[in-house]
Length: 186
Image 1 (cartoon, rainbow, N blue to C red):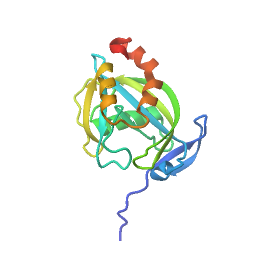
Image 2: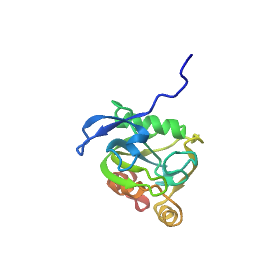
Image 3: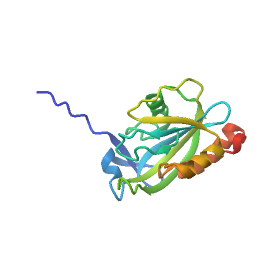
Image 4: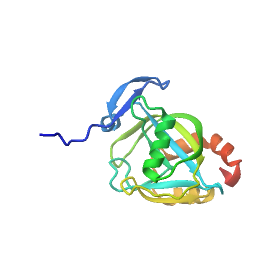
C-alpha cells in the first residue's frame, strides 16, 4: 500500500552569520521560541514605481489574511536564495521577475500573536520589476495590489500587515531607491 502523506518541507537552519548548521521541518522551525532559519523576501515594482503587495490567503497556516511584500518564503536546503525567490514568484504570482537583484540581508525575530508562531529568520532581500500579467495562486494569495509609497503608508495604517513587513521593507529601502531612481518616495 502506497503512503500518500506529503513529505515534510525542510528549511535550512543557520547561525547568526547565515552559515548553514542543519535542517528542520518548516512548522517546527516556527514554533516558539523559533529556530533561526534562512528565508527570502521579494519586492517587485511596476514601471511606474508602484510596489506589488499581496494579501496572504486565508488558508495559510501562518499569518493568514494579512498584507505583505510581493513574495516571501524559504529556500529548500542547498537551494540558493536567489533561485528560491525567482521560483516562488513564479509559483505564487504566475509570472517571472525582471532585473531582480540582491538587496542585502536582515536578521529578525518576530512573534505572531495571532498564531503563536515565531519568525526567527536570516532573510535574503531581493528587488526587481514585474512587467507581465499576474496569475496569483489562490492557495497562496487572496488579493494583490500595486501601491505608491503614500498609498502603502495609508494602507499600512488601516489594514493588517505581516509582523515582518516593515523590517524587511526598511532593510531593502537602499536597493529599492536605487532600482526606482528614488521615484515615488521609496
